Length: 368
Image (cartoon, rainbow, N blue to C red):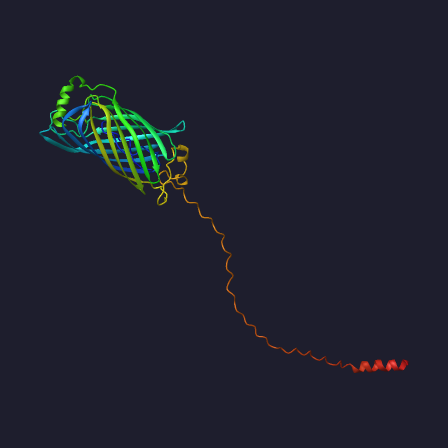
């Protein structure tokens, strides 16, 4: 599955990319994307003096520190052009820097990820300036949570949060409801997302002054810096993974809103995942990503199915019995047989005692 950050959501300009996946210890996720937005009208229905166009670039990094913890950060930049019918204004630059964290839990058979985001602005609107707006320019602190229902290839999800904005801006309640379907290396995701203002801007009573400023610098568009905005939009995204790389694209269209811009967005993005524990995968197929399981994750990860690649660790080959040692080389021997004549026994010498023999013979004869 894509290793992308959805947690870098910008107020009035939703982040794109796949819904968050469960962490895998030691994995790093890199994401770069560009979103094109165009608007010629506002909500509630009413014409705009001119036109507003914005290209938002986002770069982020996330590190899965533990099986249930993820930390990350990133930055955003933008280019904007507005026209009020007479003058065309442009602007570009860095928007903000952000850090975020996620903590994952198992909750009644579902996966739950609590998250926190802090974003510090590098751009702020200048009420005396004459440049197109790049963002709201507010410091943001957000807390919220994702809920996932693991259903193999289909993965429904929902998000609800609360966002504090400084500078007297209204506080927001962002939300997402959608589902993601995986088909091998490809995925498709559809969702309904938006935000509601849950407090009043300090300039609520000076709305006419704010709107006059936006007509001058933003072509009258309420894309940024509007008072008490609310918005809902439908989005469709598709993507594919090729090894450690992923590509994705999307289209979103606003459906309703209050004090916000009406328009559509087009997204293109590229992701890269660095996973030291990744296993070799099949060439043309990936398995569905598993649900979050902290008990599983605390074991050696190389023993389990890789979340994105979908392959088990290859079994160890059986050890073959060692062959018996080879006998030593034969030694050729030659025997030479020789006939050896038997040794002759030495002849016994005759006993020379003849006198005794003669006497014995005489005695015998005399007795006869």
